[in-house]
Length: 100
Image (cartoon, rainbow, N blue to C red; front, side, top):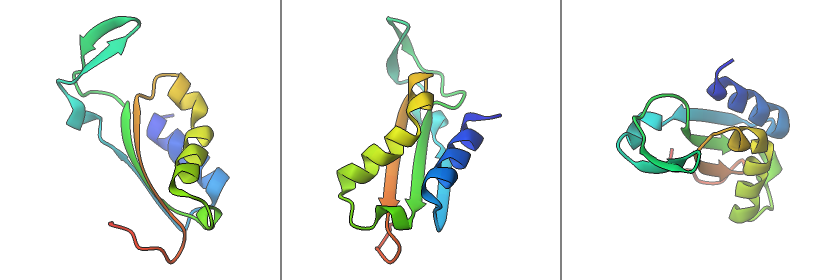
């Protein structure tokens, strides 16, 4: 199963979102430097390492922006520990304005 599919499933199970978009942006980071196994390397942009998450869910109502980000990171803790490098998180509660 792909990391993207796993992310989609975990966020759906955790938050029951009204809208969810999980976008692989790994290719946008080609040429960036990162540390891999203690060694600095240049990322080639392949794989599933950088994602943008756009999510609208009732669970976010009344939560601060930081709390929303923490909740998403907590839901994906195993993936982050296993090598998921970066998440751009755009959370909203129903009825809130989004940029997308």
